[in-house]
Length: 286
Ligand code: C2E
Ligand code: MG
Ligand code: MG
Ligand code: MG
Image (cartoon, rainbow, N blue to C red; front, side, top):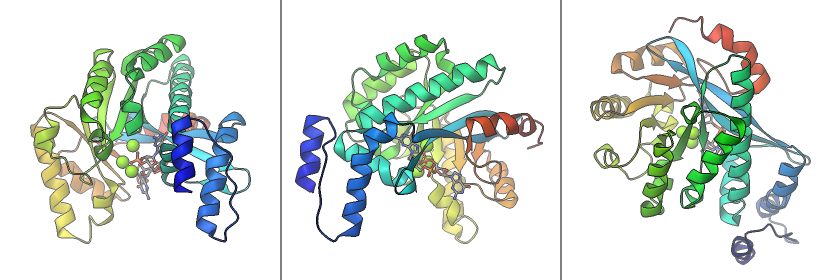
């Protein structure tokens, strides 16, 4: 299977794989890999949007776009499962292009309806290694007449380090056209804030893993607190993701966080659902 995956990656196109073993996990992987092109073609994939709460204004000014896939045979599949497979097989290019189009098209629709939220989309390390990325983003924005300030790009801390030189070039190009950059899942990789300071980065998103232990482990709490303080003092915007309760939110507020994202404020919603909840989100007090 490893060989076949490598081959598919070289060819930059999906291969049909056949597998006759009895390893259920590998068989599932094959179904996912083989199913992705059709999934895209037959609209099995769609985006959901998770609102972010702006602490100062108490409003929702941003959302994060998250991909969803309802596989015809397997049912819903988590992006945590199929994104890594798309990366390994080289299909991530196709998928990210689809996400970019879907997000910018959605932005155009919302702006027409008077909904002005910034949308952050997730990209992979291979996307950032692509010297054409900034051009692709610029032409997509032009196609839908959406200003660059309306979108933001999230990349994980580990993706940042994969091919640092090209990534920095790409990030600078994106920033030059007006697209802001967030470092996702901060705290799980090997970079430090002192180092990020030299990179074209606007926002730091503290990883959900720390929040899972926030109320049980003093260390997790201290890491979050210190990271927020240091990130703020270095000039980054700071988001904490995975906030599930009011008590956590209240504590984070005292740490000086800018925005929070989490099920306590709002769960990921389809575009249509978001349009319904959006007016109420903006009337909540933080
Ligand atoms: P991420 O970018 O760090 O996104 C945050 C994840 O945490 C999302 O999971 C979100 O639903 C979840 N989350 C946020 N707040 C809470 C909370 O309060 N409680 C709990 N239990 N979960 C919360 P999701 O949507 O399953 O996405 C998982 C990961 O898959 C993302 O992590 C991102 O790395 C990747 N991903 C999602 N969509 C895309 C995409 O369009 N492109 C790429 N390349 N990766 C994507
Ligand atoms: Mg993200
Ligand atoms: Mg994250
Ligand atoms: Mg994550």
